[in-house]
Length: 409
Image (cartoon, rainbow, N blue to C red; front, side):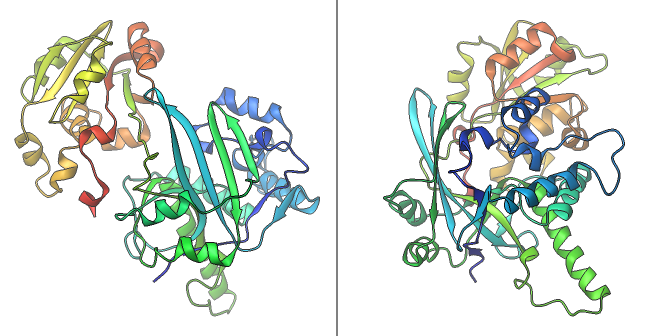
């Protein structure tokens, strides 16, 4: 059964606004300084919808969620936002990595909501109540999807990726370079083109890359809307007949050559009685511990067959290589072998939890840990003790760990 559909999206009218000035990153990666900058950049920036400021004196009838809904209504009313015919939105990004340019292609569509795994949508992480409540309040006020989920589509034959590469030969409605990344978006509403793209996806399998909280929020909102109908004496229609039965998603086929997953490093801070020497002694039970340098760590990690990562403390750096598979087999006997051999699974189980006391709950709440994609930032934070930093863990990209989506189906 098909669960991916075109939709009549609302978007900025490029004749009334400079699109490069009104876009913003996803709400959950925007820091305080960037938030202020986006507010100052343009008073019509989408930041006013996705991440408004709270104010003293906010009330149930006047708060950052209701103000976002007010902006949305006003922008639609004055023509700043225009609505398309049912469409999919082809999105292409061009970015540098590893000394050369890469191109990633995907598309925005609407996905029929279902419980995890019921209709081919799968999660890969757990969620917290706080972020879901925040997004639910915004969804209640705006009554729409203001940001897309990011999904990876299983595309074993490369059919979808091939279609995306040749789908359009006309000018995009957005063409802008933001933070060094080229962005182009096309509106595709031609029925023949839509069929060409969507027909290979009769039974899609999608793995959520980002947006678990928003997906579960949409499920909660769907249930809430249908329950209100029942309380009002109405019989809710079949699932799929209401707008709340869907969510907007950006979908990238997993065969796309531009689908590059960069590593995310960990910085550990504010642990009580932490000693790097004692920690390294404890590591030797399951890991080979070797001295290394900042200039060598990435190439050394790339050459490791078993799960491995770097450990930084002060100005020192060590390579930690798992001695064998048995420790993870014993620790997680009921989990698939592919997961047990992920660098991150080994780090979080045998190191974070067992040796540092940073368990799953603390990881979810980001207690004693913060994340960065920059090796230099990780090393500098540890060397300077930034924000109580005591040590850091250097990860490698998932492709280097031999992970494939098919292994977790």
